[in-house]
Image 1 (tube, rainbow, N blue to C red):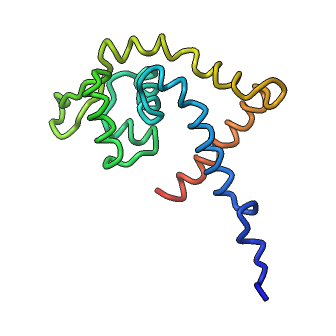
Image 2 (image 1 turned 180 degrees about the horizontal axis):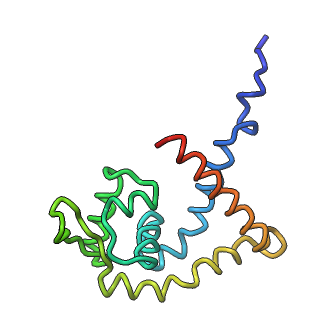
Length: 151
């Protein structure tokens, strides 16, 4: 007879609904990002730079919780697309600074409706903005707690 261990059921795990929600949310973004010819991780980098242009690779990595070995190839592809430029810091040659090109800055105007379109894509009566806001706050609290544990 197979031993039942409810603690190991998917529905009893914190990680599974977070993983599933992340994947499904990324899928919801896909059609809007495809119109801009960017990926979800590229969109995150752009949003970080739209908020504060000219950041070091390390600062962007910290902001997005991405390791350098993930971020570097992503930034190279964005540079090839003409969205960002990489330059060495004048104060420390070891530091690579990332800033938006004119094309990257112009994309901000095209992307500004994505958050509203995403909420609309949930469908009428499914999840309202207040619920999303409360969920987002709870997730940021969880991220902060987990980040303290994994640093």
